[in-house]
Length: 605
Image 1 (tube, rainbow, N blue to C red):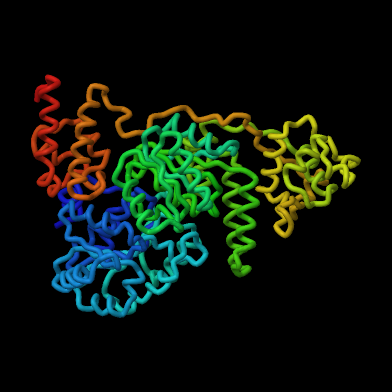
Image 2 (image 1 turned 45 degrees about the horizontal axis):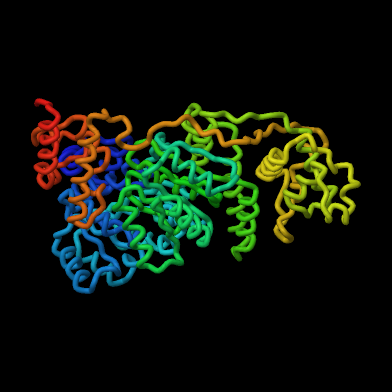
């Protein structure tokens, strides 16, 4: 049995992508590997196929207990003998799974790291013939990362206790320091490194200036993603619930998800998101890791993420099927104040705070770009992107830039002369010559900077101040009330020794040209009845088995059925995403539906 035959006969695909074949050859041959591949890039095949090729059971280490059942259900649809072992199983079922492991009746077992590291589980594995260990979401080993899991640090014990068993560590999010940590902490220094491009070309990256956030979000969904699945990330639980309630009042199906909700509520909302069409989850970062739903058409951030790693991980949950998707974010100066205060108030050690400040600075720099966002994002992960992408807001609608040297000097001078203790709104009013009781009381109306910027609109001044903070010319005083202070790098600018170019404010968010993102966007209108019929059939079959519809077939596969209209089993098997097991399970039903459409529309074979 060759990797190619397993890919074709079991998974229903004709060819490998990128480094998949090389990874599979390495691990199937008994070698260790570290795999860096974007979400939706096909990481799972890099351990699933070797587990099927090698004798014994493949052990998949995953932190995603809530999703293991669906992951296992998807493998069983393919005829793979898979199971999971976690606390959600009743004792009798756990015993049955353990017996199947000992007897060699399973191809793959999913287990959380906490469960794996229990002495009882390690002893169980010593009784089994092991094909490999796959350590998924390996970036969780990084103590400086956005998703650190302490138990991942102990997984190096696998190399000591099972020295002859190959190990493969996989992640979709790792900057160069995290990549080094993965190798060092998991004892994989000698493993072969496979670095696939982190690029997700189907995702369009967009950052909009925050105005009326809910209305902006509602317009974005209504104009570009009506009736489609999406994820909206908010920083606080309260904002999650308020946003979900507001979107629901606008006629959308929006469900909240955060760690403060009862477990059964979180579980119910997650299942609705996975199994229904067009559901929007509004969530904190407690939601999303390991979500395999392929047809998420957008990920929106209403608050600034803490790091580019977190942002990339979260946006990567959109468009896993390869069809167009959006990563859309709102951003304002208040984000900077809030995020910096969270770092300083965290109680973490100074080393940790220094790393988090650096990561936040990188996130701010990304938001204020006037150049290609994709090039900058990939560069952060150590990848050189050769040209502008043409699929981000700064490429599609380049921002206007201007020589802001003089305006910036006025702003910095105003900060200094007013005592370096006032927030952005007070400074904007001061620069525009708008006095209030405080300005009169402090004598600020008599300063040379009062009214010196009355020719610049308030919105433009807010953008200027925000960019000065992002570039380090100004800092936020977190000991007081979020006032702005001069940064260490402002002196050359104040002295006239350097110039500064900034982005201009946009009075109205200029949306990129509209493009269709849904799976049926380019179908012949005459074929839409068949498309809907196949989707209905898929949903019925999924409901009967209690699995998400995409576990039966992805949208991409249904679309190929509509385009090619297979009339016999050989043609059905040739459709991308149809393997032999799914041919046996569903071929007759789908072929009958297609034949009925052909007869009703007058098509001939």
